[in-house]
Length: 178
Image (tube, rainbow, N blue to C red; front, side, top):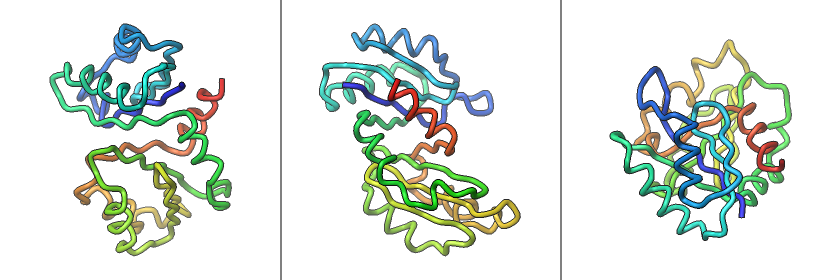
């Protein structure tokens, strides 16, 4: 089975440095195959016959060897591609910015939905997928007025999500299919 590992908050502003080459080697040592990393922000694809529960346990142990906490999201190829198959029509529109918020197992997804639904959506669109939240910002001029910009970082669940922009989301899909 093909898996996607998304790491949160690594290699940002010179902090929480993780070498992708080193991480790739460590994942290969776990017995996983066809390991691919994409950019320096913690996008890793690999194949394994292990169940997602075993993969989660092994990856958790591996990440615990770092001197700082690394939150993660692990998805199967099917879960990721199912998200793509069910995207709202606005996702393919030419809007200012698109981001995908993937949530970890450390937070209850319904509570995230509930909190976001209380936010005033200003010049933005939100779609709740099965494994991620798709957030579109309509134009650059109004970006600073969006709930995405003003409120998201203040939420208690924020440290349990990892965000990828629309281009990275598309590139990961391409790599999962290669």
